[in-house]
Length: 545
Image 1 (tube, rainbow, N blue to C red):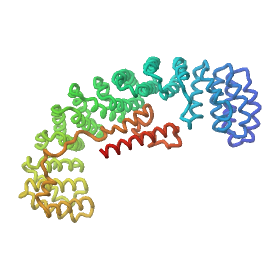
Image 2 (cartoon, rainbow, N blue to C red):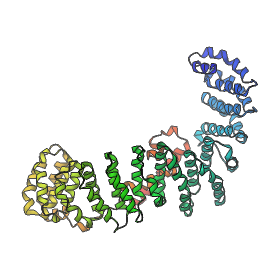
Image 3 (tube, rainbow, N blue to C red):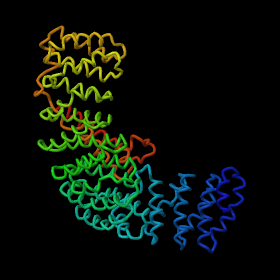
Image 4 (cartoon, one colour):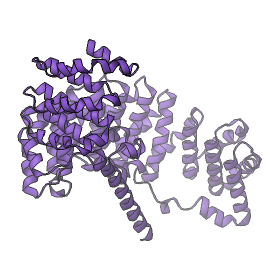
């Protein structure tokens, strides 16, 4: 307690703190190792520039103490001295002494040495490593606690093996570590395996299959916070090796006791696990979530059902359409709205499945409340208006209530749908379209609506045939959707894979997005800049091609 009091008040009373230096010096030579360690830790924690000259000698003595607690306290004391006077540490032989202490018989001392060297040599990219150091640490892997294991694995992840045989030897030595119960150690080990085999593509399928069991075990036994972190890393592994977790899709079913953020992520992942063999089970499970009291969870479940439809090969999407059409009959506004949005996207890939959807559109447009869903319904009416007998009379109430509509998205879609219907059903739409164009061109609430109405009017006035070809061309000639853009973000997934086992995976952002360059090692900054240059070169080459 006395030491703690001195450390807390040393900053406020530096002159009085100097009076306790002699006492601490004496305690650093006490017979009791606990007293020696506490005295040394307190002496280094005073953090006064005026006491730097008094710290050096006790620190050097502590590094050769016969007690491990005193030695590891001395190692951390060098780091505190470095923050007080960096040039003194770098100009002395203290860094060399710490390197020598990596051979210390106590694992906790070695762990502290790695931490201190990595921080002192941050600008150089961290602690210098070679084959001898790596193999020495791996040979003592059982001497380290979980915190020390993470430090060792971080160093091994930076090491470049000399040949494939050395890669296999390192992986064999680390294989038992995958069975530990600490998720941080397991993820660090997985990162090492990924780094060691990054140029051995023929082994990736076997490697990911080996990594699957530890992840699923931790998912089943971890807390919600750990589960979320593991799920984000699992998501990255699925993008890198599709199909690896498909057989274990039931492990990703939600539990009633899980927090919502974990449920959301599991629902998103279930869509990526769907294949022709497990499609029915996954669709049934997702359909159960649609009736959940949480609106966001229900929406995500419907979105995942749509993603299953995009992922499956042609001919297997019928079950997805049937599920979504069933949801349109539910008396829940947000379910109907989300189902309409998903159906709109699916019809862009599977236009041949439109019949079941257009049959229910006439009664839906009257009850849909959300603007995005209303816009989706109008898109379908404009796209397939020739197959809907009452299509012109469905949009007429919307046109008459134009002044009451506040959503620009609905107005824009109404303009497009009405114009398309005009070319398909001109006698019925002629007067309606005239009223709509007049209202839209005089609309001052949205510049986009005004400009589009003016464009359509001038286009039709100039050449009606060309306007028909542009606005209502042959549906069969249009390019269909093949998926969602975010699912094809290969560059981001590759960048996140290089930062595996970090917050980048959880945030789904590279480190440069939330860590300032001066807070990262120079090696990391240089690597990020090189990766950006490579990506830019590839993009330029693609554009030129």
